[in-house]
Structures are given as structure tokens and as C-alpha cells.
Image 1 (cartoon, rainbow, N blue to C red):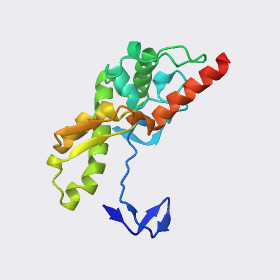
Image 2 (cartoon, rainbow, N blue to C red):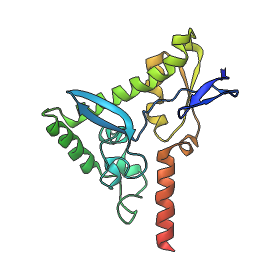
Image 3 (tube, rainbow, N blue to C red):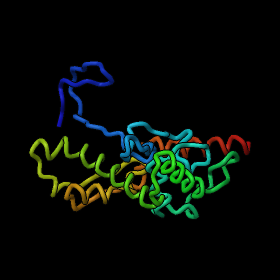
Image 4 (cartoon, one colour):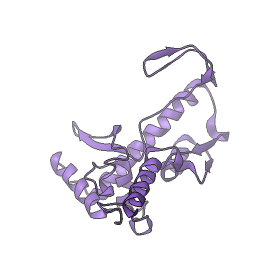
Length: 197
């Protein structure tokens, strides 16, 4: 759909443009516990410091949930982390981050259970954003194809599609180019190459 009157960053725009609805739920979305409830986003760790697993002291994020649950296999991921850009993802830091998060909230949840809970919230946030521009406007999405993009999109697309009753998902091989995560890895590689020069 096209919109002819919209607001972008608080400024009213009167120009034809695609009607886009965004949600702050991606791989960098920060996982917190507030008032006894799990919350995901809208704050993001971005590419720097990034998730706890990046070895830069970042907070627990949706990416860390996927690392802890084995959806991201640290041994198969490029070794581009740490001060010299030559270390793997830090699974121990991720586990310690979940334990600290539970302790700070006075909870005794297992880290894996917490990761699954946060991940489910992120999936629902993504699905609700899509519902707002489709189902709530009377569109039947069951025949639609969900197109995934962003660095973490491929990790979540099937679960988002299932939450919406969508049977097809399209994953482009360069989908990660349009994300802070993709940019973060590119920045890390560029820094590493600069250090080698």
C-alpha cells in the first residue's frame, strides 16, 4: 500500500511512499526483566557493543538467546570477535549473562528457559507488527509469502510465519546486508583487515 500523508521521525510528510510499519525486535534487541516480566527491546545493543556473545561486554540480546539455544552454532560462526578479531562467539559469557540477569531479578530460572521465553516474546513482537498492517486491516495472510531480511531474520522467519498462519517464507542469500548485524560484521572485518595492513 501507499501512503500520502505520514510521519517520519516526528515530521509530517505529504508525499507518496510505501506504507511501512517497523518494530524494534531484531537480533540486537536487549532482553531485560522489569517488574517481574520478560521484556525484549525496544532498546538495541546494535553492532557495537553488540550482544554479550560478541566479546565486547554487551548486554543479553535476542542473538544471545539463539546462541544459548544452539540456533547459532558458535563453532561454525566466523571467528571475528574479541580484541584481535580472531575469537569465536563467547557462549560462556552468554550463559553468565543470563544467570546474572536472573539473579538481579531475584529469579532462579534456567538460562535456556529464559532464552526461550525472551525469544518467544521477540517472535510475538514481530508477528504483531505484521498483524497491525495486515490482519487488523482485513487481509488474509494465509496465502502470503513472508519475506525475511536482516541479519537475524532467517533465525526467526519460520516462527513468525507460523504465528501468523503463513505457509511460505522467502530467504534471500544477501538478506543480512540490510541490518545492523550485517553492518557490524562488515565493520569488524574492515577493522581486522586494517590492523593486518
